Image (cartoon, rainbow, N blue to C red; front, side, top):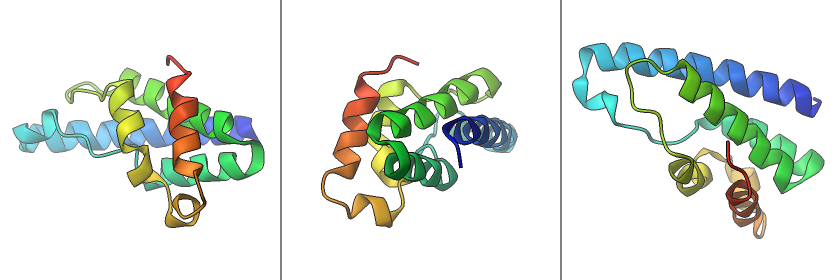
Length: 115
């Protein structure tokens, strides 16, 4: 899969996630400020980008997700970029987090981006 395709998928996933979060928040007010992580689908895309093109490509996938989620969320409070960096390890699949330094490389690449 090309990086452009991964970025498009990240946007689609973010829009879907934001809609779901907004819908949940209608019935559960506590959900307005709750955010766990970018999600397993985004984590898999970031892992694929990492393997194919490195940490910067993985970080850009997460940044694209972040931008699209921010734009699509209507009710919920979108996460800060710092929150995305702090939680990316939870979104990445074990196959990538088991690799020496992969999570840290992606986090460091994310710190160089301002989405």
